[in-house]
Length: 136
Image (cartoon, rainbow, N blue to C red; front, side, top):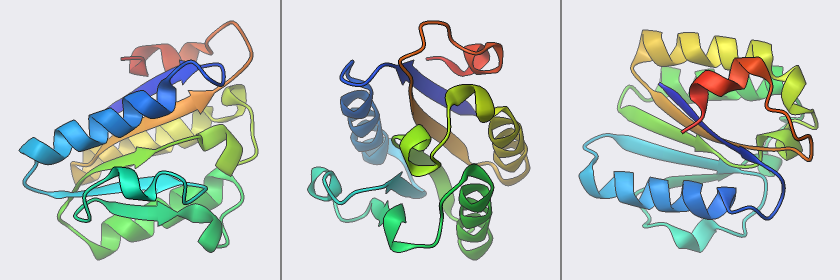
């Protein structure tokens, strides 16, 4: 499963994704990972949620991020959900250029039983078609 929060900066996506992670933590039996590109949110979670500041790693685009996530999953079979905040900032891309990323992430989700929750920032008014099925 992939769920996307989509909208312009300041519309509440980060707050929604943080709340989702904390709510899911209360009921989850597996490991949860939250990926962001700053340390700003680090203290908004219980220590059991693994917070990763992606800027500490050599990840600068969507393919590298996909590889990074694949490595996390390969190294820990207990991961049940991965949250990714501000994907367009950390990959330095526009939402319309993330279709392959979402497609491959969908395969990772299905093959490894890991859910993904992603915030996608865009000033563009129209949501790309490929994201519409993931909107929550």
